Image 1 (cartoon, one colour):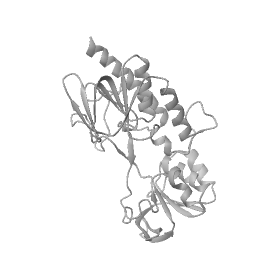
Image 2 (cartoon, one colour):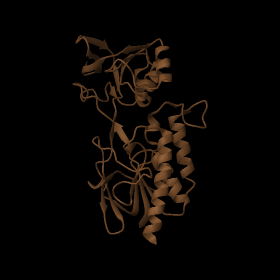
Image 3 (cartoon, helix red, strand yellow):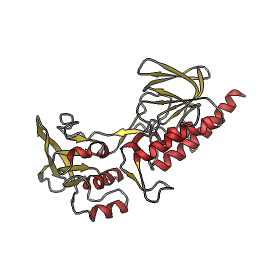
Image 4 (cartoon, helix red, strand yellow):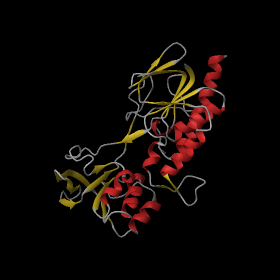
Length: 308
């Protein structure tokens, strides 16, 4: 079957794009390789999404997004896109599972994944102390000491979440100041079991067959190394885009994020991008939703001209 549009990714941007497209009467395939919701599934509380003055849990918002889309005839395709090939008047999407999906337009909403820390011991203790999702794994460390690495909103939010579960949180950041929102910083400083370890980096993650036991933390200003006893480390040091499956003709920035115009159009006509996969400054649920709506509108305009 030839679809009018294929949306890759079922996070806030992808669900919004699929919703706007199907409501406009075009056929839509939504390709997803995990549960709908994307990164918000790994977020404990979302406090800045309009309409939820008391905040909303990430999984609750994901369920609401998905329930809204379930009211419409969107074809759900489970799988991971491994390549996008441009043909005459349409695109052929190859899935890692061996299937193919053909569509006249493509909206890329694949987002980004957490970057690795790059410290010795990270791979060895991945899943045995090293984690990238406090909401997913925090309960394993209830009553214990853990480390959170990073200085942005994600690191601050997850440190606050973990502080309600664990005995103590060491928040390690390579700079003296944090780039996260002031409201989170104020909460961090008012939380008694969070210790700030600034101007510091993780030199090594240590442990035994039982799992992680400590980390060597070096102060970049003094050169002094401190051993922090902790059974878990949660890494939030930036995001890596999921864009390697796209044709080389799709322009990306130096980090691999897709470059678009204000209408979410990429350098390849018929391919659009929305959400965290885009090269942009703000990566929030609300901005992803806006991107998805804009990309769908641009895709509809493209389809109208294509079918004229």
